[in-house]
Length: 381
Image (cartoon, rainbow, N blue to C red; front, side, top):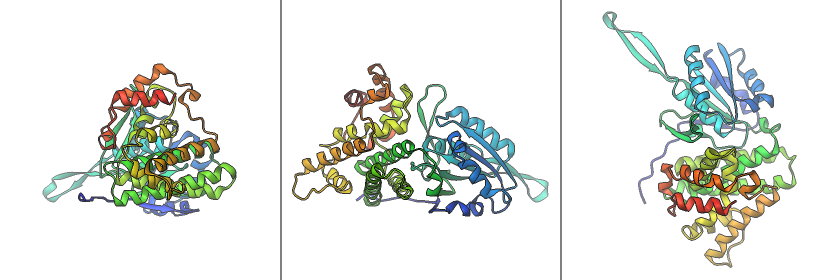
């Protein structure tokens, strides 16, 4: 076994009413806080609810709203706001893309401070801006990871921004704030988390620790999505899905992104389809592509999905895992063809070109270049 190296420096706070402790972490000493909020979070009343938790504790609070599909344009505008205000804390509220942008705003907003030293000499030091992450849907927590991907304003391609020292100070997951989020947003974000857990489980970087998180994430997400299909008003299920998304984030942190993530980002660059939806829709097709390359791993995935595999062959169990995902998507009324989302054949080559460029594809079990990815996307039309 290769040497395992892992670290989770972020505080993870989970549970209903976890936000009541926000002031302890965001403004223990009357800090200046910039809230980077997804516009939808404001529309749902979540931003104001979170702001109230730190009013009276923070020295000043600035709200910077960004769209769901925020790009590097919003990123650098946010950096300017944080630096101008000389803020101490950036608070990210939103879904996957917003959290990536908010994290990078904090990462690029380090302040230069001056300290007087002996004999009148001045010493310049750098003060990091604290980042706290609050997802309002069941999504991947980029604050836990050293690398985030942000949409470039010039070409719509997600570019990596890496800094192992710029992870979130705290990730606060409070299922109670997801109650007013539309069901579709919950379903797609949860399916994206399931896809990331699948990617990390079959990755060449997978290890016993990431495996434990991956399989538990797949189990938690699939079981509760199945129940959500018949009990859409059950708010407890949303809390369970939040746990599943957190487990998927941890599995990705200890392992790697994979082909579903790359295809989702590629589709987003060439079309109006978000990476979250693209990743969700393409999952069963990526599973089919990897069936023979990681068949033994598919047996465990099938079991995590609730399939009985004791009396079937390895390949049969792998096929059962794929069909289980397809059945789940049918129960959730999720269209499974890219054409259902107005994706046309002329967008496939551009999507494949972008998807094939990501460095993390070095860790997928079956090599996939531009041609292979193009074939996968074409089959999914």
